[in-house]
Image 1 (cartoon, rainbow over the protein chains, first blue to last red):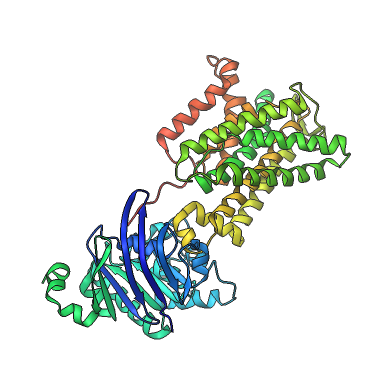
Image 2 (image 1 turned 180 degrees about the horizontal axis):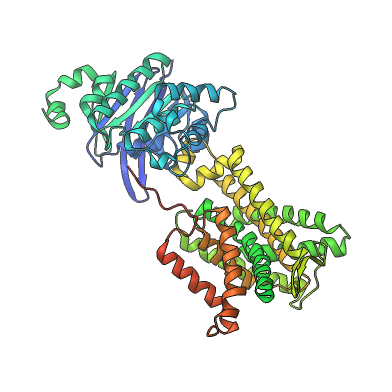
Length: 236
Length: 297
């Protein structure tokens, strides 16, 4: 069986600036995989390449199907959700509209039921459902961004530095939620993070990205004990 | 006093038509944060199409307006696809130049096809007065124009807030990138915005020239566009009701402030509107009803 996501020789960037120099990695079904790396290593670019936001060469296969030349709107319909860096909510839209638009690509009639489920998980979103997303706090916006992404009922969720700019307690809660989502529904997660300790804590496997190529890969449990990783990314 | 009331009614009539064109501008601005300078000329084209349908094809007036709205909607959708979409939506200067080019192009085309001399335009609304008080009279034209604006904005609000395409439209205007990430096809959504705006603009031009005091000519919408841009900016550029308030305010400046402030000559009525706009934007940069930029992380 082919993996959920298989990336081969991914190259590209923004115009003349090449960021990715031949990436190879894969994510198996129901796995949590984390990509670690310093600023500018190409983490965000990798996720943007997968969801079709930038032009790249190489191969990106979703459950065996090539998606590298597909448009973002079609990739969403194939079951990929992307929570971009900086939340990516719709600031002028109400919380409820943000969730509704998250299910834009769906055609079934269980959208309301899913929305109720998220209101149950995050009661604060229910309290603020008529408020604009822009008026929420950073933590609430990240909850909304995650709920919004999962409203599309994805098979693969791309999370771009979900911990950025959030208080430690909120980050911990968020990562617990990710682990729970993965366990309960078998949703595959590909997380890009600088907070290595937390990310490795919920991940099955990890890749370390350096200057646009994969420098290190391995099981999360092994990497957490690896001296180099500890020094460079955990600061201990 | 009666003169004042008369001028108030005039303000209402002018202001409502400015508001209709301003609504069209707001629709495009909401989606693209771009002011479409060709909006007035598209509307003028719509009025000519109405005229052709009504006079040459003998179609009843209201149906002719409705058909012209659809025709202009399709035309604007084509313009969006061919002239606008190939360009980066985030880079405004080339797009502004394109809308200016469209403005000149449509104006010249209309001149070639229909000549530049004014033509009488059939009335849309019953003639006569709804209400008279001494020398002041409220014309049926004014009543129906105000009603048309209210109904149009009401319907647009329903469309934007209650339908799926409306949700997509609001999402695209809020966050282009996230819209793509939830699966919205941004190009066709913006195209829908262009079509909608052209249809509303056509209605605006038809109502404007349906005033028996006015005639249709290719340059008819030049003044209206300037007033409509001011109205839209005054209302906040992204608010439909703001466009209405802005339109009425600009109409009021034109018919109330200019006659009563002796040092503003009539010829500077247009400039007076822009000065008031400047003053308002100094105090409220987002306009009267506009959404101030939200940024909280």
